[in-house]
Image 1 (cartoon, rainbow, N blue to C red):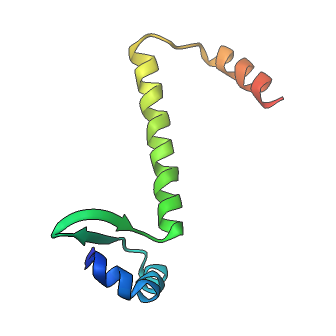
Image 2: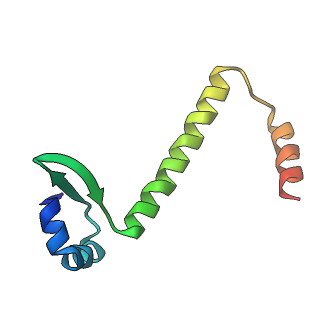
Image 3: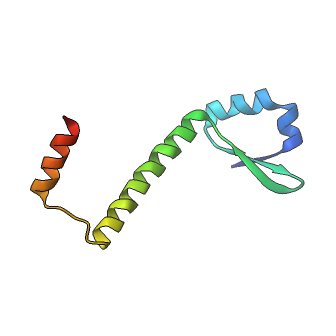
Length: 85
């Protein structure tokens, strides 16, 4: 991952954004020597959010199982059929 100063981002915004489109690798922006933000391509951000949503769904499912909130396969099929209708 590349690191850039916030002042470099101000001066070379178009160039940095163009590079994001080609390599999809996020850029860490620093301010006063400390990490301040990440700059990433829209496609990479969307992919990251989709993956996060899937992981959150899995975690919710695991919590439901741990808490005993489960249904039979047949009941799940009935609920899905109603939901999809």
